[in-house]
Length: 391
Image 1 (cartoon, rainbow, N blue to C red):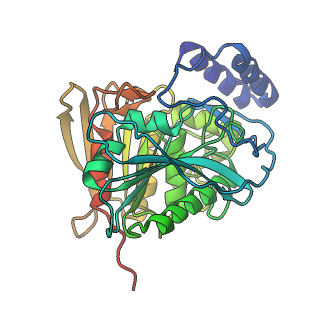
Image 2 (image 1 turned 60 degrees about the vertical axis):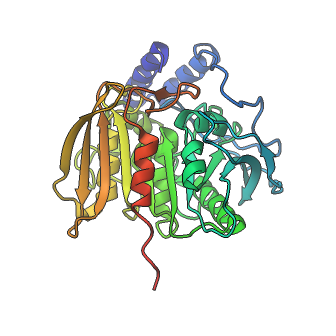
Image 3 (image 1 turned 180 degrees about the horizontal axis):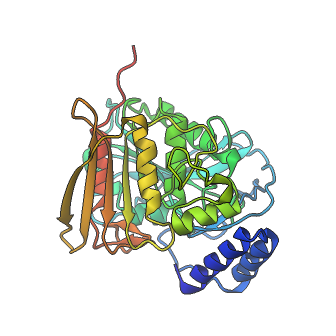
């Protein structure tokens, strides 16, 4: 995140804590009009990617910075048939199809990309749902995380929902708005509905469906997993925030800056003095958390709070190990087990890493190639946690 936006966040936080919300909003508007540098081109990026029929305008989160605009209902749009496209790849391993489509739920329409692995005939394969961060799109996120290559070799689908620019000018998932934090409402319902449609269309193994995301996408992954625990067997939250811990501009700014919510939430509760959940706490879902300890966009304390929410009342002393990635990043991995020795959650704290996908590829945005491979570790964790059979 550039210095201008860091200064902006500090100034906006000062103004909102002083009750001067209108001034904070105007300051962010002025900055967005001239201080934000143009984003560099991303693999497969398309101009005007928002669905033409939409006219939503939910709050903006710009690399962790928050700006509220009026929300308007979108017009309904028809579901389009997927169209095959070449699959982006970090190497020759990612063989398969990368197809596009749209999905509509309750008058909200989003585009998506779906990686379809080769040799899937007659098999029920897993599905991993990947939620991109602000300013990103599915092609960019697929390139940066490299998720399609293991999907090709290991045999699983990858769904990349795409946030529309009309719903959020910087393509951020609206994780902090109350109407996008609950089951059956807003973006969680849309993402869950899209997931169910793909499961039905491709005969996905219902016990092996997972969700992960980066930054605002990580925060929304935590929301969706907690809201639909019968659908998602595990979640991965990278540089994200805890579900339901903010519901307006000042709370979101405070949470991202320091890991502590605004004044209305600082009365204690699930996360002690730091954060109190306003919405009912989500059902604990096995969760793996990655967060850089030098993240200046989303404070690293948020990763600890995501972990606490995932553990719920089952918190125990963790098994802690120190390590170093092949490219020289040190990390601390904390593993929390249940009474039978099965992992409930993992927390990877990456030393010196900022707001970027650990172990990611430079062909995508917000990546850090030096870190431990978050894609590989999330997949390992996911496939260790299928849903329990239903009786």
